[in-house]
Length: 504
Image (tube, rainbow, N blue to C red; front, side):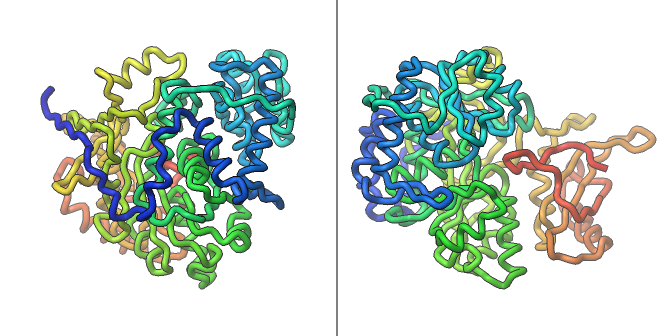
């Protein structure tokens, strides 16, 4: 195939940035998520695992709760290979339900809690749920589904049954893609996929022992479930679940986290609040050392602003279909516009600029979506849809999404993300967006919208002058013809990615 490059990742780029004692945490012999949980719940039995509301559960206590719920699921007829829905907003119950289902050998379908009852009933029929696990907070939504499947409360208890023997190749969980550029799809991930994503999260993030994580991201999202929950549990850390994001900073003051996982928009909001209140790192409880961000592009000014308060900000790249991580940048002071080095043990292929990936972290496929699977895979390679480049040091850079490419009438192709990044240089810029529009005479033009950062007051004419100066440095086909300055942020999806399209 023309214009392609294949990279076999045999080097571990993260060794120098990892816990020197990391080898004692990595257990490649774990055959399943259930086996991993049995090991860590025994190894760390007396340590705190989950903090939720006014209670903290040890690993041993949580394992006993998981075993009793596993027994209740077995009593309801759930067997190895059954699909089990989990509809519970972020809480201890959500984690317990996931672990009980997958350790029984069932496939946990993590249902976004914002869906209404009719949709949940439709999913129950489509996936033929053997059971649907719910909590008091989701009881009303699951009632319609009760007509087609068994409802099991997350507090249900029965005589514990042993965890099922599962292999890495066995299906484990269905997580839904964001659906920002198309219909949301259910990605089926194996036990091996989830374990690889969990292990990758141990590399390049410094000390692993005795960490305290704040959990804000949805457990129905791969970033929240794998990196912000399974990875901390894998290393014997404690996770504080924030049920209401408005209470995040109050929880931090009490819990004093050492690590935090956020999307860039939340990281931006947090640092702005820290500056407004003149609290520095004390806003985060005073013990935060590392902030890991992902899901979309990270504004470059955040790296310095967090470093100024003693917090190392790191970014990673991954997709639902890759069990989260493909690459990460283990440094906050070098080439921070890069999504980092690829994790070892995978193969990368860059075809006409698009990143294709192969490895044991790649999903089994989209459930019930034959055409989508045909489009997503070629000869065993998963086609990410992301346009990338790789430099001489092996660092990857995202330059856009294939589905977002703007094709001009001249035939030139413009990657919005690549151009937008150029206009984000000034410190008063929060984010930018470009899109195709037409003048009254029908001439096509590129429009740039610039969102000003909260707390910054800047004259509109200065913004336009600065943007025009940057504009002149671009190739002719990438230059914008109209600039719009906005004081409010762009509309965003549930995962905080900006929703593209003509605004003005």
